[in-house]
Amino acid sequence: MKILNFGSINKDYVYSVNEFVSPGETIQTSSLKTFIGGKGLNQSVAIAQAGSEVFHAGNINIKDDYIKKELIKWNVNIDYMEDVDESTGHAIIQVNRSGENSIIIHGGANRVFESDQIDKVLEDFNQEDILLIQNEINKIPEIIEKAKNRGMTIFFNPAPMTKEVLKYPLSLVDYLIVNESEAKKLSKNKIDFDEIIFDLKRKYSNTSVLLTLGEKGSIYSNRNEYFKCEAMNVNAVDSTAAGDTFIGYFISCLSKKKEIKDCLLIASKAASICVTKKGGAISIPNHKFVI
Image 1 (cartoon, one colour):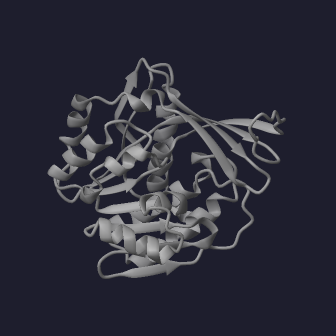
Image 2: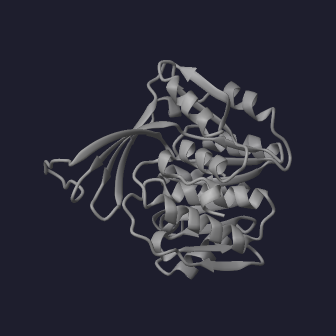
């Protein structure tokens, strides 16, 4: 079983602030740090840090070759990364004194995938292999449909959530991983978590749903199973890569045939360690400190 992540790659500019900037307001930052990130890259790093091999398919500007070197250090396979003329995607991230974040993303190279590039990557993956995708790249419906035709197991994290997601072939997705905000938008703004789960299962009956709730834990449900997992109580300083850490560890554990309950517990522990450190990918813990 191989794990392929067709995902975004960003340069993250992280600004530490007391409170998020309001409309019409100008504020001072206490610090600026630059990291490499993006939900796609973070989730690949998390899978690798969890002890699984992951192949990352993504685009970066031809001048940003240092990103490949960093990914190699994290044991992420870069055979399917491409150099393009478009600027590497980037994110402007505010982190407030409570460790919460607010993010603006410029897609750049993440938005220039072509059909022939997709075909070239997917021809090396087959039935029982895993595909992970987020919503920071283009041609997602095409990727989902082509991967499903090859028999791959598809994990989709619709982040950031946009109205276009409602038009995606979500019925082909095997695992839908959503946070509270994304889940509410997919379930017509239902508030109760169990109602959200019920509505998503009604719409996508063949899809397992994983609802991540930050400090409120997580809920997993499919046709036959329902699990709740409490979050661990820690002093959070930066939640930027917490969700990505959870997703990467969950997929890694699942690929190793661990029980769902154990996958949730291990992913929760990894995410709780992640939020105690600042930054994106660099804050994702190695499995030696988690399991």
